[in-house]
Length: 509
Ligand code: KIV
Ligand code: ZN
Image 1 (cartoon, protein in one colour):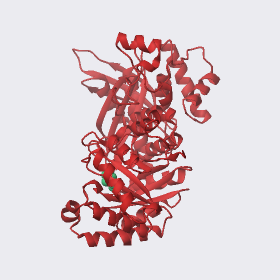
Image 2 (cartoon, helix red, strand yellow; image 1 turned 90 degrees about the vertical axis):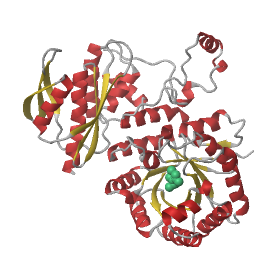
Image 3 (spheres, rainbow, N blue to C red; image 1 turned 90 degrees about the horizontal axis):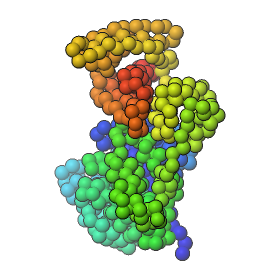
């Protein structure tokens, strides 16, 4: 039997990013896009170009940077939206315009206030308009699963006639059942006369927890593109999780016979971890495929079974999704070469000066901690990642002294350097982190508010590295920063400085 590819359309940076708490900066989106390309996705939906100047810039930077994957921008079926999308993806090696309009009577009547005839006219004109800019135009019939099937067929036929090469049939509100999705896709494939000129795509939200099941039902009915996100992030309850779709097709190849994706499944864990690192939102431990417990066997009976034969309780190997059974550790006697090689194995491609900086930090850490686990290295490396946004000169920590106790106010004295100049301030507050941050705010003379502060131990044991993530906001936007140290005050200061340096870089831009 000839194997057929199911194309993976990743919308982590568009639908995913729309979810509260998941907004990303341009450099973070670029970093994510590069990893999505390594993962092997076929299409990266980089954003909604007309939504804001920041979105436009992110889409166009990703379009310029990504080489193998197609880069899409979403746009409503409106001239000004399509113009923005076309301009944003124009430098892509493989551009795509993704235009949409709702087709359900509910949306037509209450949201768009147009008739079915108007809707068909708009599809015809706008898909044809988008085709003027781009060979590849995807049309989405928003709320397809609640659209009258005959009208959905008409809309699909119209879009394909006007030049759409992909037609997406979303379950926008996560309402459908797998049987309904199967029927919808099957009907469209049977009744639309020109359907062979386009690929049918699925885009299923997870409001009733059916996103992945519905996507798989669509695939069984003949959809050959699926829209999904890493860890299923997205509007409201999210989208279908890419790692789950991919591993269903792979693990149950006996059932989804003849179908494959181009995803390098061994990169799934790293990609999910990167998303968590970038957004500061941890993956739930019980998350299928990429959660920390997905391959952990706690009960004695299970452990015994797995030791005798892993297949007793493991339906896929941890290695197949990028989880290693044994972590390789480094120590204080490890040299720069071994260190640099390990970073490379972990997928980091740093310039030499960054490796030097990291190696110095690694040596310091190795003095404080006997063994450096891979997770420590990842935390260190991620604290250095800036894809493009770096301030001309950055604030660096020189030293700090904190005086604290339960019967006194806390004082922090912080000394920072920038471009060869040293500045020092003292601040008084109710706790050591607060006091250090107040001293830093005095030094940098730039007002900001602290939007979020999170701290976690990277590994177990008392000498664990603490990883701190802060989010600060000024009048221009929100900036995230990350810092790692065995000392949580130092980690907090480093995290704040990395956010402050981004804030400064944004101001300079
Ligand atoms: O959920 C949805 O319908 C969408 C479309 C715009 C593709 O996100
Ligand atoms: Zn959506």
